[in-house]
Image (cartoon, rainbow, N blue to C red):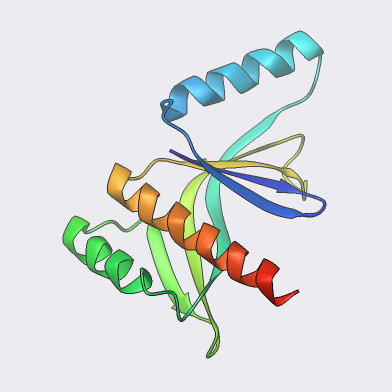
Length: 128
């Protein structure tokens, strides 16, 4: 499963071995015990990856082979491609800008998406 955490400073992505249902149940229990409101809804999350990352071709091939419709690649410009994922948004309310987005994909796709995101982050840091 991929877990995307949106915070004030940006996005952080993790690949987690726990089943999606277990992570949602744990988050719900935490909210109940803490007296917090929790909003969970299906939706899409998107982020950018560098267009020139060599592993991108591998991801495109894997998507074709797996015939997964939960991942959409959209060219943005000459430098970036947007990856859009279908999953679930978990936050204090539906309009929150900070929260957690989780999605379950075949393990190979999760690994590829996570790797592409990490490589893009490393490239962005080295440019600063």
